[in-house]
Image 1 (cartoon, one colour):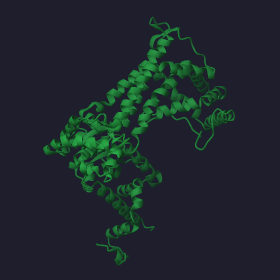
Image 2 (cartoon, one colour):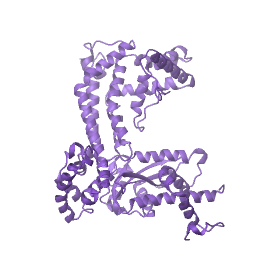
Image 3 (tube, rainbow, N blue to C red):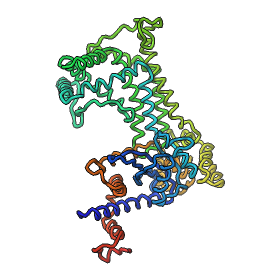
Image 4 (tube, rainbow, N blue to C red):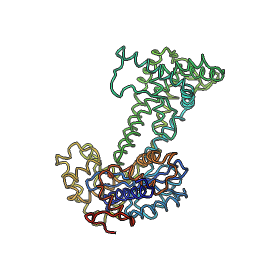
Length: 545
């Protein structure tokens, strides 16, 4: 057991059995792929491949298939590596019905990207740009949509650096925040409980880290008094005048109405998009539900623009009064768009905050979402949305669903499409009469209930449409989790792992539920088959060499 060759053979035997279970679950079904690349600790470019399919129980599955070291990061090189992985595992590209990647040019290129090269061989493998990545691009655009908000996000990293740049300052920040929480508990303003008020820290917002902008602003909001006190300590105790001046300027900027207003406004604005971000990161999210959530966010943003100004202004005013910050007169004249007061173009402060910041940011967010999520308006997703069972199948449309079958004409013959014209109305009447489907609100639940009630055999063509809808990928969050696991397995102390050994360990670790369900005897038999060994299993194992 301490022999490295035996350890590698055991890991290979375990990975082979896990992969065998995944391939048996896929069978001859259609599937989609999720792919992304990341660099490991030994500076190797690793490509993770996840397959997305509907199992025999009608449950959507995303299973890790393999991780492969690639030396050619061009679209042609990645495509060759992908085909090699699929062929090695006996999966035909003819059954490929969806592709999910990030927004890199070599992946999503319209003419020479990976998605185009794959579609040349598998024309029904429709590509979806990861919704979570697109949403993060929306957030990044919001952070630069107006000069005032751009300046605000220039100050945030400087504040984080000043209050967390040394152990002494960080300890002081946490200690003062803890004292404040204890004081609030003693006065009955907040409650204590398991998991509440955990020790936290302020981190910089990152353009590539999902939800980091909102998390940073929330930490500053909840730790406001502690941050201000630490900046005050830096101003008094700093040995160098440069540090003192920097902290003094930041403290002055924080304790003004504009900073507070923008902070509270962005917390409210980004909270709308953050709910969508969290939903997109859930496992087995489907495209129809994601489309509905996107439309909900757009409606929420429009409602905020129409009706959210008064509540936001009152919130900012109350915060300033609580923390001793002067609230300026909203009727005073200032430079338009934050320009110098000497400029001839002057507006009231109310106009500046409401129009130049509030309306501009929300309009930019809505415009960017319409631009980024233009897939929602495509014919394919419009047809798929008709399968949404919410509100008693209010969007059900027979003509659009027949059109969906025409788009996937390889899965539906002309006779099938003719039969759908009869099966779809019959399916709708049957489902509406069935008590088991009362309250069904998403396509995933619909597929599972159809299998449980055996209706997937009575309405095979309709179930096939539901399957194609569900396996279309939404976000690559599952692949991001694979790379998090890779950092746990391949570390600086284990940076010499070979590619095959890394793949075997990754398969067993990422699909641990399947791995636990495999009997030890089955792994022992596979281990015995791999090569001739000095010791052999007893005859009752029926090992066939």
